[in-house]
Length: 233
Image (cartoon, rainbow, N blue to C red):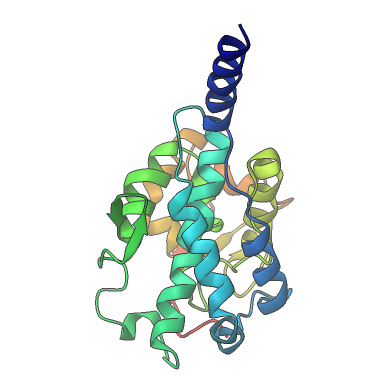
């Protein structure tokens, strides 16, 4: 009987464990240390703490998303993975003036998670975008000045909705990224490149409208700002 209950306990524990996502505390601490409130990143600082970064990436590799995870936990995992591996890519090539100075920065499969290998573009286009939440575009960071700022906190499934809203609002209201007024908006090219992702929200302007007090009309004209790919440090 004792053996039966012990086996039952292990089975239940195993099932529950499948629903657990890894702790992102190590990543959070690194972000707090090396990313300031304006989204500027100390890549030199990350390079000094590369062991902690590698430990976090190893944790992600050991605890990959499982069927029992919530959608929110999966989204937090993949956003953090994208951002952390982008930092790894820059650190391994640092000093560098731009991520575009690195050969195939988004296409190379340097990301090892479990038994699978990924590229940054695969995580973005094949995993995150199909989750159908356009706010992910403002949570992932491409290490460039015109990108949405790298947040100085780790994303967590338990409060990811508020975190995504926070990142989206910060990006939209940053005049260096977007310029909003009733007659004309000058937007980040992110809205041009991923225009279709905002269709479920009624289109780009309707999406933006929910994050600002500026009132757009059918006569509001749209143009796009130049994209600065220089390193965000």
